Image 1 (spheres, rainbow, N blue to C red):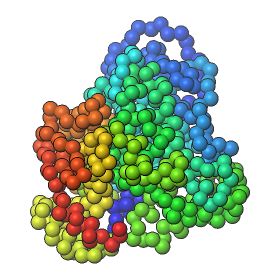
Image 2 (image 1 turned 180 degrees about the vertical axis):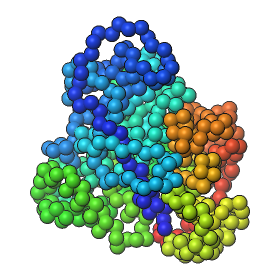
Image 3 (image 1 turned 120 degrees about the horizontal axis):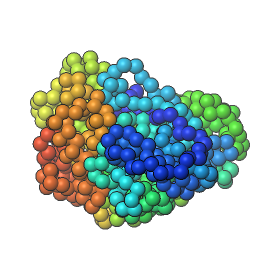
Image 4 (image 1 turned 90 degrees about the vertical axis):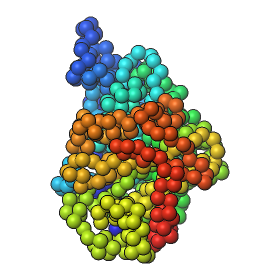
Length: 555
């Protein structure tokens, strides 16, 4: 079973409730400034945006705004078209509730360790989903680093605050930074490549409008974040899993160049964007499901969203079924190299220049899609069971098991299986991305791996996919289920979030709590291991990675 198969089964999705749909006039402010402790609603927590004034609230001294529109509704006649600016509203709009999330398949699951540690939330779905959230220490005109979060869920599911671990309050407080997170179009609503099948010219960008939404949000940040105490000249984009893929894709987009100044990719590395050999059959399959000819693509704007989504799921299933050995088929809807919006993949010579001045930090976690995240019983797997599972993906699982158990004798069978799975995809791709960045010249690239095992549930979830989030966001008080709140956990969260903050400030993640962290070169991959005792290894698992690469049944 591949790690992306596990990702599909344990995919992250959802969101919170929709924001208030209408603007409400407020009484004139005049109350005294409230104390910093707890949640309060000071009348001076107001800022100007392109759409109008918004009022947020305060939590333990951090000013918070949720559900601010950065673009117009994308349904009906605007479906599959580039984003448009938000229409202005009158009065002051309450920005205290999360905006609606993009329509998507239901990702709710039954009880499991992942359901406990991830603490996911599911919200109202609507095509009017272009909104963002802001956490800021103050509305004072200071120029703080901006950390712009892009959620995961491949390109098909997820939301700006689907995981409580990505709440920006702790990071904003720890680093004196401004944190932004966004909702944008997903799945077929964001990545249906109608141009590949000869649809009318107005749909030329339909295969990449989900990425154009993110660019629209970055432009909003450039033009507006100073109102929230942020520096538009120092913006770091960061994302995990599918969010990391989106960060990488932005590095190849001319329209995004100059809108961000640093980039962090967490457990979502890849150096290639889909070509039309991938997107064209999927688009054609969707129209066939609905009985609509390419020349009549405008009819898609009138199809009820439930009908459209159901047809999309059938099209993805049919598209991926003949390619069981190709893990990228499990991604489904995704951006496409179209020659214009995305001229080429990120590190090809024609596109390197767009992100050449942007420092990159990239990494993964030790066990990624470990089976114990989905069932604690998996911790009792034997090596024979692991060997059988690995044989579906690898030519010689015995050689892999022997090599990994020699290198990591304290790992149990499911831990070894998870490390092999992580090495075969996330870890190899992280190394490749960092070295591709270094080979292109320009700003530096830094590489890491999280090796810290959560103490929750007796450590059975291991270093699970998403275990980096409560540490990097320093959000353990928001989601204590993920890693606890012990002094050991708090120290780990401080070490990791301080690296993210240092990188956002300077383009280098080095700080006093870490050993010397050298940058990556085209021929070397020094890796920071985040753990109770952080270390740097010049060629972490280099031989194991090569063994995995030559042993895979897929390219």
